[in-house]
Length: 76
Image 1 (tube, one colour):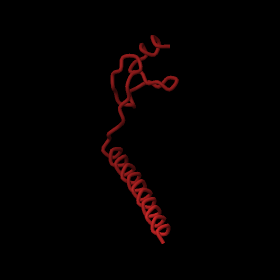
Image 2 (tube, one colour):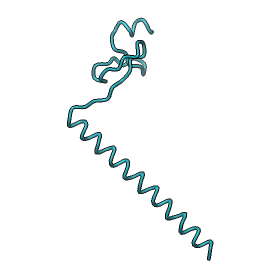
Image 3 (cartoon, helix red, strand yellow):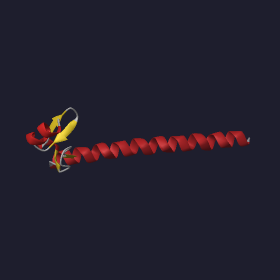
Image 4 (cartoon, one colour):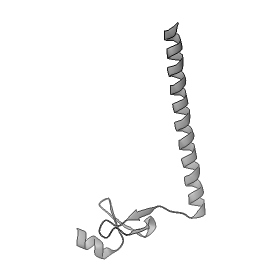
């Protein structure tokens, strides 16, 4: 009898964790959609000088972000 109760509790906890994760993913997707509609974009950091700038203004070279062409040349 105790084994049955134990497994019922374990299964209930697993279901709760799954529901919480699915809810969190839905909330993040909703927040990302709202941010996109509001014109908010992600910030990235220049690999050379560590200045943060909008992703649309950054240069992406070999998986690294740079704030200017001069920093690309000096780092490569």
